[in-house]
Image (tube, helix red, strand yellow):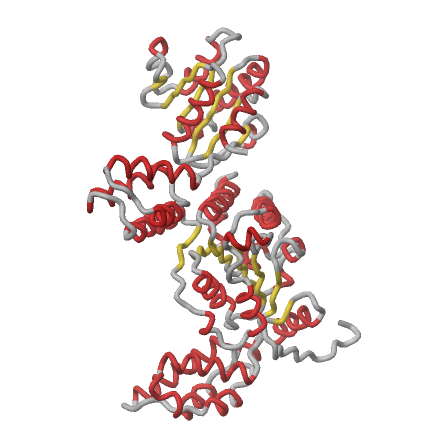
Length: 503
């Protein structure tokens, strides 16, 4: 259901107080005005500086007085149908008089064809008003709306635009507000007098800027390839089979969009690298979510940020959403100490994971699977749960080869990969990269290239995490051995010591 359809339904159902969180004032007011006109309702707009605008009889009324702005609603005859839009009214909701007036109006307007719409850039609703305000989200521009705007601008320049270029521009604009789209396209036209295929890069830079300003998602550059991952053959095969699953051909075949993956394993085993490689291999933008950024101090703001994150991710779809270390954000979830905010944020997130139909492929990584609530591990949230364990000897050889091919492609044959793999048991991929860096320091400090012996010397100085976090690793291995996760490697290392009877 579109915003206009939902809004019209709320008008007919006589919902007295509607709260629309959006930064697109001009666009949402245009949509509301159109709905009011179709319903033969008068349309009023108020802001703190200029008061009411548009209606000559009430122009300037309520200027710098939010309480007086609400009193105008009562002054109109009960039979007059009207919609009142109040800009930035969230700033006054903590005022006792304003809150009380809204409650009184909520009771009065149930029997009158009048509706009050509060427009705010974010959801900040005091607890005592949560029952009388109905939140209605205003989505970012759809692909068809963006296409119409692009065609309008193209006609204004007097130039034609190739259909393929138009499609690329529409796709790249998704996720931006209409104001930002108009601004960046105006910049492109001012630069060379028309819209061109190269303007996609300009739009993507604007998109990165927008995402940075949200301070929720990061537009992450993905340059890593599937071939940069050493080992993890089962996981790579799974991903390669789904390479074309976002295409229109897959939709015609009847395939749903892939939902996502939950990757569990200790630090340094390649979970984050896999997320980056997926985005690069599928040619999709990579958005990184730090779940901790969703939580804010004001009541209701965390839930608002979660909805904003979902809206932005869906607007940018198809894309890969990387949720890093999700276990740290929701470990031991019980709602204590934060008025249940964690539970509400988590509930919003898992509901979206289960019900989303948009092509947002979610890659969540976790180090401690037992810290996660059981709801997120249920089938339906993700397509698959993979256990990314410590690399086997053969996989360590592949990891050494990947790194040395990058560091010394001309001299790869001088390194004994078999020996390096054999002498580094229990080393993760990140630790292998670290000992190679240390070996390079050894060689550089002596004015020569580093050797196999330098790498082994560096390895002898490092205590791998597998030894210091043995209990955590065995817990993860046991989780995978019980069939609750699929092994990412064909040569899965599940070295489990028998449990004692007391455990």
